[in-house]
Length: 110
Image 1: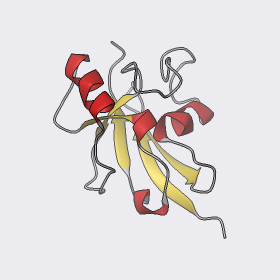
Image 2: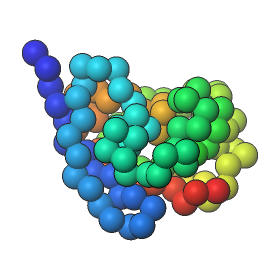
Image 3: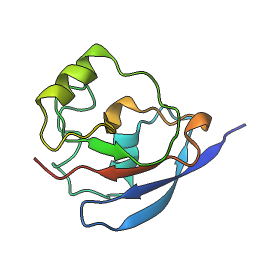
């Protein structure tokens, strides 16, 4: 049974979009942003979701329990611009049923 989740994504213009993301396609947050075209092509997910760039950095606004940060994500964020305590790389957040209600804001383009 497929389960879609509802998440909120605030784009770089400050506009909040309520989007529905499938949890059965192994998509991550960066890919959801791309599929809804909430960031211009070439400004998000430049490395293809390998945690090798910070173009998909976002700020997590909800208290959703996220997967633990891996070393490569942590290392990337330590070098990125505009990093906050709630920064995560969108490519590292998989769309699972647990992410229902997730609210994020896209970090400014560096």
